[in-house]
Image 1 (tube, rainbow, N blue to C red):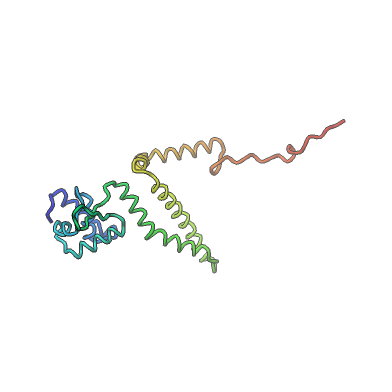
Image 2 (tube, one colour; image 1 turned 120 degrees about the horizontal axis):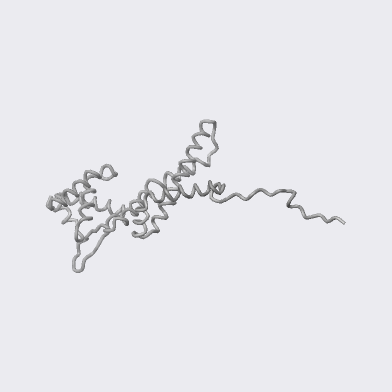
Length: 205
C-alpha cells in the first residue's frame, strides 16, 4: 500500500470496520482513500495505491456510486473517469441516512402498514398487531426526524447536535410548566362548561 503511515492507518481501519457496516473490506478502503485524497482519483490510481485488482476497484466504485458516496468527475483534456468523495461529513451523514432509509426502513414501514390493515385472527394476533403498531409509530417518528435533518444545512445540524443535554433539559422544563398550570397533552384542556351558567338570564317582573 503506497501511502504515508497516517493515511494508511486510516484506510486500513475503514477496511476493518467495513464488514460491521455492511460493506466489504475493499469498498471500505476505497472510500477511505477517496475521502482523504487531496484530489480526485481514477480507478488505476486507486488500484495502484491500494494494491487491488482493477476489477475489484471497478466493482467497489460502482457500489459506492450506488450509495451516492462518490461522484464521477471528468477533468479537462483527460478521457479517464475520476472519483471524489464528498468532503462535508454532514453531507455524508445525510446521504447515508437517506440511502439506509430507502434500503432498510421504507420496506419495513410498507410491511408494517400492510400488517396493520389485516384483521387479527385471534388474541395472539391482536397482541402481535399492537406491537407492530408501536413499532410503526416509532419508525415513522424517526423518519419524520430524518426528513427534517435532510432539510438542515450543515451549520444548523452541527448546532443541533452540540445542544445535547440542553434539549433534554428544555423538554423537562416544558413538562414542569405543564404540571404547574395543570396542562395535559400539548395544550391546556378548556374548563368544562356549567350547563346552568350557560342558560340565558331570566327576567322577573
